[in-house]
Amino acid sequence: MKIELSKIVKPSSAPVFLVDDARKIKEHKLFKFLGAEDKDYIVRLFEENGDEEFLRFIVLPSGKKALIGFLKNKKTSLRKMIIAMRRVISLAHREKIKEIAVNLGDFLTAGSKSEEIAELLGTQLELANFEFTGYKTAPKEGWNFVERVFVIGKESSPSKISKRNLGGQALKKALADGKIIGEEINKARALSNTPGGDMTPQRLAEAASREGRSAGFRVKILKEDQIKKLGMGGVLGVAKGSAERPRFIIMEYFKGKKGEKPVVLVGKGVTFDTGGLNLKPDNYIYEMHMDMSGGAAVIHAIAALARLKVKKNIVGLVPAVENMPSGSSYHPGDLLKTLGGKTIEVLNTDAEGRVILADALEYAKKYKPQLVIDVATLTGAAIAALGQRASAIFSTDKKTEKEMIDAGEKTGDYVWPLPLWEEYEEEIKGTFGDFANVGKTRYGGAITGAVFLWQFVKNQAPSSNLQDFPWVHLDIAPRMTTIESDSLAKGAAGASIALLVKFLREANR
Image (cartoon, rainbow, N blue to C red; front, side):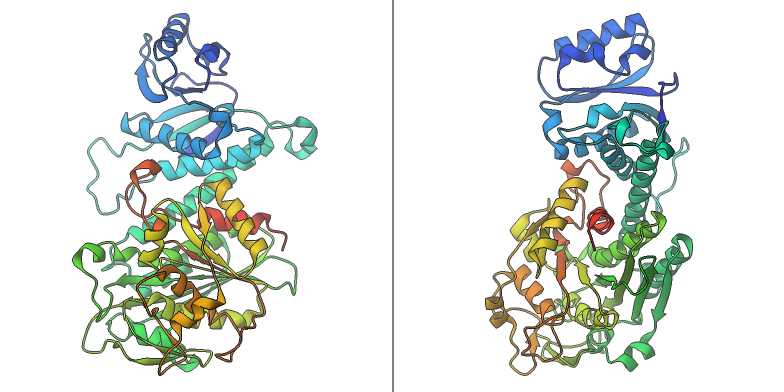
């Protein structure tokens, strides 16, 4: 889809009118591009609909298609605007409209800048125009995707724009940047939506390599013998039951200052999760090809940062395995020795994500990072705690946690904090190993999962409470898939990518 900054509404495009005061429809920037009869018709429609919220498709007397909407108090809620951006595309998609024209001012909220909203608009339009069609037969008339969006708008404050950005260049760049972010999120959604029979650890590694070549970052893939040589007993243990051999994906993007410590992103890459010998029930296993969504998020967050030419040092680590039941599967009761020497007592083979992440978090220490962020569809308990509208965030650093929550609010990639307290460590103490991979009760599973990972962020000794860098854990299980009110296609949501990109671009690190 092309997203273009424009000064006029072309006759071929359907204008979009979003207002919060029906009496001011005549002041709308797109109103002047209509003929007299069409103007009268739109004014009458807004008068007749009162103050009830709506967004609908209409055909004007001239035969021209248009979208009109009334949103109460739209200037006060960025959350409402994000959904409105998506709904515009969804409605155009439904009505088979190929070109639309939107007024950037319709999406501005109190205190927002045009450039910030333009970037957000570019992202949300891309997200809403996505549908996973790789396994469908194309209809004779083709797919109903929107092909072009014209954006009418201007910069927030001409006095703040440099000479290089005169003539709308700042807005053009913002729209282009937003489009890049949206494209990378959609690529991650496509990876996550790919069936488990086709998305193996090797295929995930190949996808990372392709992105590295395309976006401009280094990718190294460790195979099973190299993983074994390093002593990654967690990765090897989980992978034992599958014919598909594990991979450990390393991505390096070093465009920051020389010698500057990197931020390390770690993503869970379980390409299909049956639960292992602790087999999942049938109503929970269907979507488990998306259990590598954290890995996909890390791959495409780095790809987005590289395409945006962000001047930072970023490393991505993705342990990729398939968790299958077989005669060679790892067992409940097994003891696995991780890369750092700490041992894991396996009490449930379906708590495999934290087992492979333990090795990855230990490996992250090799980079002497300034910050480590892991992303994983880790627990159903996070869904029980938060529903499906926000991911859970745990952090050892409150400043970083707040910055990430703020980044989530600005991008629509919402996160909410849960406690990371030392008291919970009692829940995951092992009997025969250092740590058990599930808690002692069925309560607080999202927290005990996070506390388990925390042990592998700390220094080597199992009893150590010291660590050399702040750490954030994002449990994105609540946002693994879209829900109806997202106004996005069914399937993977691409959670955490927009959040990570926003945070890493703006964080003063």
